[in-house]
Image 1: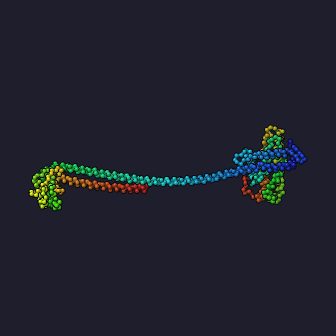
Image 2: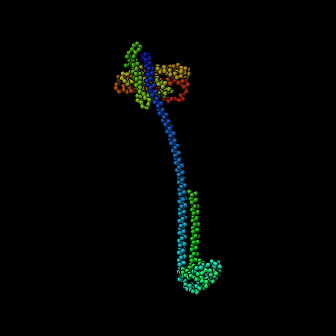
Image 3: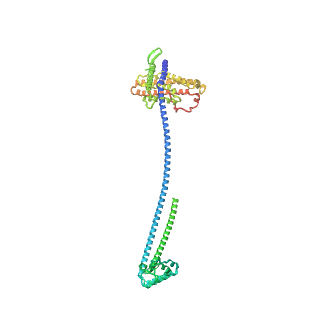
Length: 301
Length: 241
């Protein structure tokens, strides 16, 4: 018989005892250890997940901050670029204005210099003309011309006394001051007498009463004539000039030349002023054209 | 030559006797319990552990996974019975490599005892899970006329469990003894290796069949008619005995 029931019973007991022993010494401790480790692992995983969540949040914060920094940087860069452009335009405008001013001042100075040079040239020309004319008249001056000039002087002196009563009123003889007659050539006695008689006729008759009250004066009452101071002057260019206490009557080549010179200088000054005005108007036109071009350039840019 | 280690009797007093089956079973029990005690004495719960602890954890977790894969949702409830069944049979068969050792599983008394344990454990687990009425009602599934057939099935499968294990182990030992006589040296070595494989396969078969019987007993009638909506793990096809 292969089945021994005592052995069967014993093996059943042995098996049940083995079940209890292995539960006690094998399965339960191992399972407890596994559970504890799994809990630790779960805790580590949970901590790792929490750390990962925290890291993700920090990453998001970092990315967000990065975006904000980038936006701020772009904004600041744009603002700086805009300010730089404005500053550049302002500097360019100031530089242009400064250049324009310098150019204008330079042009004005050049114009002034040109005008001065032109005036100098005209003046030198006139001086040369005057000198040449003076030299020519000096060379041409002789007794005949002196005689003609004397006649002309006498005519003027007569017309001065007869034509304009106000001039006569302005001529006042002062006691102690003799009229001065200047001429290039020495006047003859006849010419001197002719001048003295003319002056005496015109000037002494109103002074007759006054002269009686003053003594020792240059006017000789008895002889009814004047004492004149005759001077020889080369610069008159064969002319004659009389100066009676500030009133002056002259007829000479020098006088004509001087009048011509003054007229020429005045005409030169007027020509220079006209050319300067023309240059300024031209500059204004250029400026206006330049501003219009700048406006057009700015709009197209 | 003995057909069964029961025939090797060391001591006898009436019907009480100490044969090789009981003695070697005690030896195996002592080895298993002392080994478990020694290894589990210094268990660690951190990530650094000894290789023996690793070995035991691998064994325990593998058995749990196998139980769960068969369909038992709380494998730790059945770990004591099924795990001990597998480990005892496996170690009893593996120790055949030692000379002079007689495997207790080569005794029909041992295999019958194990089959009787399964025969008793199956209805106990079923009643604990579903109650007496529901368990008894499962014998009349799908119709009441199936009651005698189900009872016969219970008895026959218990007998099959006992005879299958006994036959395989006993035949392996007998073949090895015969081969040792006719052709020593190499061929018995190969047959020993084959016997180790057969013993492991038989241990696994006994374990799986017991688990399947318990799983069938713990499922209610409704669960039997409807598929499991959420299995714990992937079910693998049952090995053929």
